[in-house]
Amino acid sequence: MRGLKSWPGAASRRRIVGALTLASAALLSMLSPVVQAEVAAADPIDASMRSCLARSDMSTTVGQVQCMDNARIGWKAALDSAWQQLQAKLPPARRKLWEKSQTSWLASREAEKQLLAAVFATTRGTMYVLAEADMQLQPVRDRALALRSAVDKAGGPPPRRPRACRADAQCEHAMFDLNRYYRRLQSKMPAHSRPTLVRAQKAWTAYLTATTPVVDERGRIDIIGARVATLKRLSETVGND
Image (tube, rainbow, N blue to C red; front, side, top):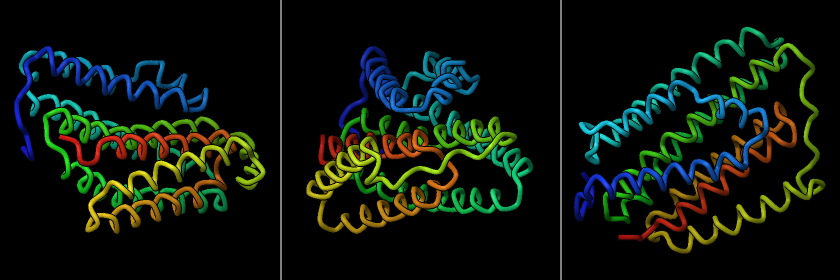
């Protein structure tokens, strides 16, 4: 396991997992009411992960990461299922827009994996191994929930297309925060890793651009808010030991 200084006891591990849960709760507060309601319903994937994390035979760092990896795999299957359902419900023109969104999301995830690897390569300590597993899980979970919500709405009228961000004060403020944390992360990353951040941010921007036509303003804020939370968390993580 990369860069581990020590293996904490069960109590310490519970505190670490609790901190990850709080971070996820903070991100949840940025999500739309529809997505919040769906999360609040205690999806079986989440329930299974919580049960796994609480098992004594999974209390090691390797075990805890395995619990989160299993949940990520479960959410990926849920994502794929929702995607197939959504494609079947959409008229051709709308389906094409969603296909662009999904393709750009997949490209963004690939670039993001490289960024996470670069950031967490600068850290030492078991808690960062768990944090990296959590940050691999959350975007897949978020996308699965967003696609499920889209499936539920597919029979109705399309969402009202968002205004330009500069005409939406909430969007403009969120982008200000995003750029602030991006610059902070860029300044703290090793010089050789900064191109990885640039590529990941370009891929995420392409995803936002491709997805804006299929969401409303609240949906756009959800996407930007999640990115702000990610960049903030990475800027507070890079270089820690």
